[in-house]
Length: 228
Image (cartoon, rainbow, N blue to C red; front, side):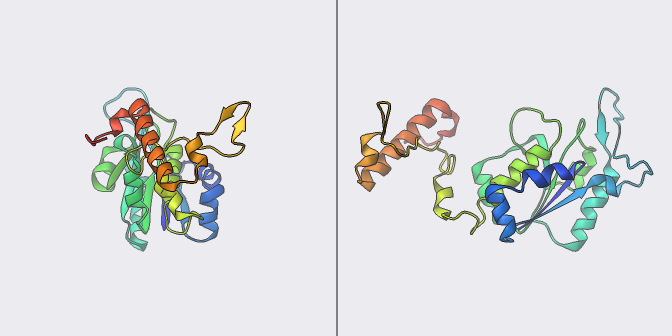
């Protein structure tokens, strides 16, 4: 997979996406990140990429020309499955969306800034808008890193145990059950006996029950199955 990220601060992303599982994926050439400084595409001698909004008011708007030229240059080189914009009013990032995007070959992620981007970019270039939560960040770089990380870990071959991702929270619209490790007794705080029983069937039933209970208590909006 190739992920091209368009940003005003490319250095901030390389470090954020060069550790742990994502770093291993890069080293194994399962994913390639390319960071593009939008200022490099500005035709202004001062490398400006923002201007005042026609409507007035506080804040600046990212100009259409640098972004349009950058996207156009990339699309001349290859086809992209998705051109994503990190937008606070976009589709909420979910595990099912990450699962779907993990099968893509080429993705562009545009990091928003200021009061947003010229609407014509969204109308003519962007194919998907994604939000990572109901809050506002200084820029889209952190959101882009979250999106990229959540996709890359699902690429076949990235995780040592590929079945691990199947038990992650939200895979079945459920939160993961509690987990424990040794020692079985610490200061009188004991691991549930069922997990020490060796009975795989009973353990799986317990884990499902715990997942449903936790989801009902903490994230009830995820439960859309009446049987649960």
